[in-house]
Structures are given as structure tokens and as C-alpha cells.
Image (tube, rainbow over all chains, first blue to last red):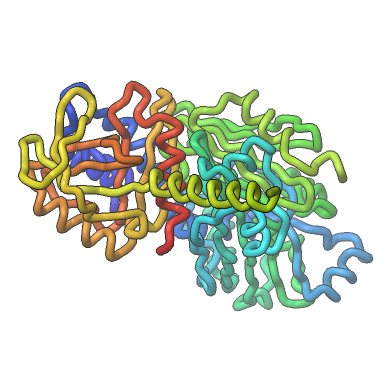
Length: 333
Length: 153
């Protein structure tokens, strides 16, 4: 297996070795490494997303299906479930060493050309991007770079044998996995995302992603089983299933041994999830795309019909909250 | 009379805009620590370098430029070369082995490292950290981003 961290570190050190700058200048490999990793995250994001999207989504996404009325509406909407609320749980899923799904990426997300302004971003993304006024000014002046990435589509097939094996490895008994789930194909769709890179970090926003299932597929039952496999206890799995009946949760699955911490914080328009990584460990590679790189913070929230993520290695928590609270348009809804 | 004033203002604006655009040019040039006939002597921090007046790479050879500030406050720019630009950069860095390349912005040298091996690799990435105490200045970052990201590809 390729050690990405080691390879990247060596690559950076080799590059610095190649450059012998002016005598006054002192190379700092750590600075370069941090920078390079930051950039690599953009380039490799779609690959990591492939690995984690279905853990993050199918592993723990629930939307309104339990209430009969809602279920009926959902069926008429071709079972397209929108995911609106970021949540996080710790899981020891990698320890059981089984894939829950056979995943096929049907449409790759690629980062588009740099755009000149927000009007271009709106045109390409199909929604009105929301930025703090200061960042919007930086996009216009050229100091921040806006691009549109995606859309991104994945299809996967459920394997009843794999689910049963995973439950068995967890030592979970008495949970029935219906045989007629075997081979059921479901999909995950994420529309275009507006990505703004600025000196202090990355700011990404998109319309809520959606899960597509065949009509009549009992998504809530499936989600409860997935939560159990992810390491959530029986009562919590049942409560979580119920808790997200009306809200549409999209989960960050944080490995149980991850150093990153996460907590809920308050914004003017509601709650947000704050992930903090005070270590040198790059957990972006092992965690979902919610998780921070080394010495990074990630703030994720939903508002104005959009999902937002702010990622920075230099901003304080207060600065990140101020950033989120200053987004234009939140007060109009 | 008013029309003449308006016309003069318009012409002046166009000329000024053109001059600003010309100033914002970013290029990567072969350079030398010793005098080379036909090359231009320029200052880079505390030393003189001689720079080939013709850039090997220009903004159009770079797919995108992205800003970055590290936790210590150093600003830099990551360049992602186009396929053709990456090839040009490899050829330039091979030709300039153990010599200098100069990154020129607004007619000034902002970074003039010596080359020890050919780059970039398949990822087509390179980083401009600058020589200043905080790496590049915010203004330099902005000028590079505008020059690269808003150029015709």
C-alpha cells in the first residue's frame, strides 16, 4: 500500500533540495509540506470522496420516511432523499475490514477553470453562491479564486452477504437483513459545488446532496442497520433513525481512534459542526471529507438551502464563526 | 467641449488599463548569477541576477494559481501548470540545472531559485514562496493570481 504521507513528505523535501535560493532565504520543508498537502486535497478530493461518500452518506443518512405521509410523498418523488443536516459520529468501521457497498463512480467531479466573479459561479453552479462580503470582494479583486467542481454521481449495489458478515463481525445478533435487498442499486448525487480558495483557507458550498433509491426501499430500516455496523448502539441507532426522520442528516463518520475532535457550535442561523485537529496527523485521508488536515479546523453547516464547509489552518474559532455569521443573505430567510 | 473631455478621459482610462495589464505580467525566465550578453541585469534581494528578456513560461502556461498562508503567516502561491507548461518547465529546469530561474512579476524578480533537478513531476505543481520575511506579500500574491488566473489559456 502506498504511504501517501511519506511520499508527499519526500516529494516536498526533494523539491526543496532542488531549489537553492538566495542566501538570505531559509527553506522550511514543513511549510511547503503543509501547503502542498492543502493543494493535494483539492486534486485528490474526488478520490477521497469516492472512498468516503458512501460511508458518510449511506452509512448514516436518514431522511423522512417513517411518517406515512412523508413516505408517500417520498415515493412519488422517486425516492430522492435530500441530505441537509451535518452530523458526526465516531465509528470503528475500518476495524471490521469489510466494504458495505460495491461502489461505482458514474460521474467524476472535476475542478473547473478559475472564474472572474460570482456571477460566473452562479451561472456554472446553478445556484446563487453566498459569501461574506470581504471574501466576495477578494474574488472580484483576484486575491481569492472561485471555481465550480462537480457534479458527482455514484452508484452502488447492496450485498446482503456483506451486511450480514459485517453484523456478525460486530457480534450483533437478532438483526434481520431482508434477502430481497440483495443487489438493490442505489445512487448518490452531489450537484455542482462552488469552491473558493483564499489565503486563509477553502470555502465550499453546494446544494444538498441526494440519495436515490428504488421505490419502496425501506431506507430507514437500512440506515438503522448501517448505523449498527458503524458501531452505534441499538437504542442510539433507533433514536438516530427517528431523530433524522424529518431533517435529512448527512454524517461525518469519524474513526474511533482519530485525534480530531468535533463539537457543535452555534451560529446566528443555527448549529454547525466544528472539527479541530491539533496534531501533525493528516486525518483527511482516513476520515470523511469533514475532517481536518494537520493543524486545521473545519466548520460545516447548513443554511439558506445550501451546505457549507470552511476549512482553515490559520483562522481561530472566533474568526471562523464570524466568517460564517457574515455570509450574505442569511438574515433574509 | 464636453464630448472632447469625455473622449480624452476614455482614452486615458483605456491607456491606463492597458498599462496596468502590462505591469501585471508574470513570467518564468532563464537567469544567471553571472553576466550574460543580451540578458538584463536585475536585482533579487541582496544580489544581482542576469535574466533572459524572453520568458520561457508565461501566464497562459499555467492552468491555475492558488493562494496559501501557512500557520506561521508565510504567504505563497501554488502553480498548477498546463500539460504544455509543465513540459516547458521541465525543459527549462533541465537546461538551467545548477543555474537560476527567475520569476518575474511587474518587471521585478520576486524569486530566483537555483535548479538542482528537473521539475515539475506528473502532478504539474510548483510553489512560489518568495524571499521576503513573510514569503510573498499579499500584493504579490494578488498580482500573480490575477496575471495567471485571468489570462487567456
